Amino acid sequence: MARRYGGEFSPDGKAPNTPPPSRHPFHGKTRSRAGGRVNFLFIAPLPLVFRAFTSDPVGLALDLSAFGLLILAAWLTREGLKAEDAYYARRIARRPAIPRKIFGSVLTGAGLFLAGFGPDGGVLNPVIFAVLGMVLHGFSFGLDPLKDKGPEGIDTFQQDRVARVVDEGEKYLTAMHDAIRRAGDRALIARVETFKNTARAMFRTVENDPRDLTAARKYLVVYLMGARDATIKFADLYARNHDAQARADYEALLTDLEQNFASRTRDLMLDDRADLNVEIEVLRERLQREGVRS
Image (cartoon, rainbow, N blue to C red):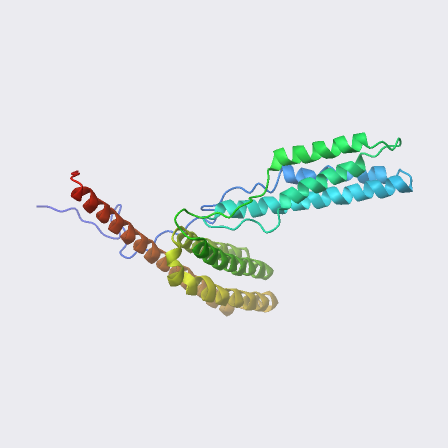
């Protein structure tokens, strides 16, 4: 029987051992909510500055104090939204240590209270402004996550272990990003972003099954710490003399790290698949003992 010829250079042919295509830098990312409305919070208090310098000394102090409180509230709200995005992006996460959005709501009310003082010196109007400000802030931005998050059936100790290791790994990735930006090379920045996505894929795998933490701990701590140190040293060197050989060596290091992280993540997922198959077989045997047939 005739067989269709196929090969690397044939139509629809694939080369043997072709590596999987790299993910897009924005794969798995969602749009951050720390923008738009939050940026407006930094603009809204600006009229208080102009009013302050056309008022008496008491009015100057009150308006500038109100301006400072409202700017601080806007900053806390923005940081709270960033922390909330990070919280919901992870399968296992601890609640933010500081409820920034709640503090931002309280400071918004305090700033509007000071801004509401008029020449009559009454207290009712400032109180109304403060209550409305806090309520509207709460409706617009919500509250901070107030409890830890984790999958069902896993004890709190295991969740805390995974959360600590992932937090440490995220700090290493952030340090890598901050360091490579000093090199001033967009291609290298994008290359580090690709590696960060690969490392975070391992983070998500370990969060889905904390039993994988022991096998992945060396990657999440030791290797990432070494990658951070190498990135810092390379960025300092490359910013001074743009050494082409150092750049090539650093890119080779990132390639090796990315391949090893991707390979280890696949192994962990295969182990999870094997565990799932075992659970399915056990359940089928129990059903067969109960007289249930497919």
